[in-house]
Image 1 (cartoon, one colour):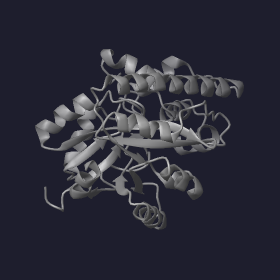
Image 2 (cartoon, helix red, strand yellow):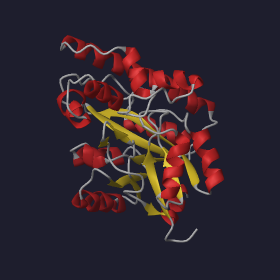
Image 3 (cartoon, one colour):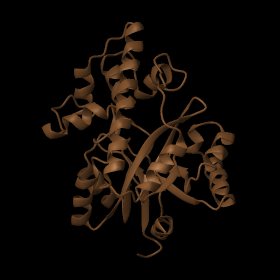
Length: 293
């Protein structure tokens, strides 16, 4: 492909905490003029088959990806995996087990909210995960996807319910007051370390990239993760400032790592865009091919 063709390597679908089903995300990427995307749902590869099928129809390459939740020094750290073999049974079982930690986190958050006098039922979360955000519309997920939804509830879904119940006025406020690190209902159950996620990804034939380092607020920690054998750094991200993007690109080059770009697209919830729009951050297709090696 020509150098001008571009890729966005970070986006989410209804397989985790995105608003749009995989096929629609691929269509939106095509409309944004992208030649390739990576579907990187949280701790699941459930959306890949649908995304690939739509990509084949539209002539857009879909990279097999995932975003694995880890922790280090008390911080949530996300590791992106690219070019993983999604047929690898060991990898699939590892992700399935890992999603149970997400379920534990969700229960603990709901308990903490309950202690604050805010009652949220599982049925409310499932409705939030199963319809276009802010529409009050009917369920969008197919019945056979319900199992995936139950294991893949994310903080954006909880934030959406908090908005709909009138507890907060916006998704951003929900995160600031309750759901992000330091928030009143935030919990961080034990997770695997970033190095373990790197090992899982590599053993599944993939490449491991540190997601959105600017969101961790600790560059010493970023350097420490580099020593875990990471293959690249997502220097270009919708929440990074230009100064951060330049700094993380320089760190990647210093250690001989790949530099990647991703919008971290989730969609619009209750009128608010979470992170960026598809294609807000993009990289040359040739850089994607170099990452693959």
